[in-house]
Length: 409
Image (tube, rainbow, N blue to C red):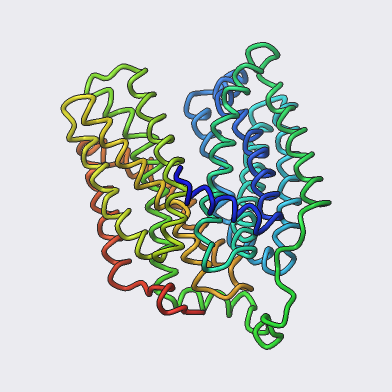
């Protein structure tokens, strides 16, 4: 990290103590959430269910998220993202405790659905809080730090969860998660201030226009918000379809070992985290659109190299390019949205974005598997790359540049 980047990082720290409280809390909460990741399939098998039901348990969390993010964004605008974050932690606490005590698969499935409900509220409220406490000149930087904080939490949790389960049983990580979620919720409730502005910049006449129908109409009327939400959908589609599913299958076809496939996925994660903060700085300096378009033109190159690879080196190169491009594109779409909508509509706009990303997470593996059954898994990745390229071109041609136009919905 250069001296200039370090100075910007320190300036960000000094600018907003509440934002850093949010990041610390989200980091801790995601350590707890990822505790259960390595043992959930094994825990489910203890209830003597089929592999199909084990797989459904893992993906079931995404179902309530599709229907929760949009109303969660609306509530964040109305009651405050800080209160919603505390409520989400309470919901997650109940789900984790219920999972740890689950007597059968049915109860465990219900707790996963409840966790999906709570996590959708938490993600949308967290993005709204970060958008509220930032400004156009530093918003992408804030978003990159915020999203990096939960990615780091997700990287720490699995190791702790695996060790805990090995020595204390499969239920133990759920009980640890219960305690972590409860403490984080109390901390948020007592210490995290309201992020909404109360100054004269937010006039009563403006607030009168922020009913649900009016907010949705203003969001849908903006091609930039629609297109960047489409980018979010296909980013999630790519993560779930190409990264999480196709990469392992392509690696097996290439003759790679399990350790080589695992290393490739780890490299993708590392590249994504490393590029997050740099992406935020570049977007604040040059504009969100100026950074998002090139990253999405580069991303298909990484995808194309995966099925085209004839050896491990090219396969790894594709993973590195994909990881870097994905990291650049992760914080910038949400910063773009927050820059082009009014502050009192940021929650619902980000909820709309999160809804489309959750749809992408569900569609990715299903469509990839369907194409794989009828052609090949490599064809599925090629189609994925083509879709990414089309969306990038559409965004370049039709999305306004908030850095130049300062467009407000």
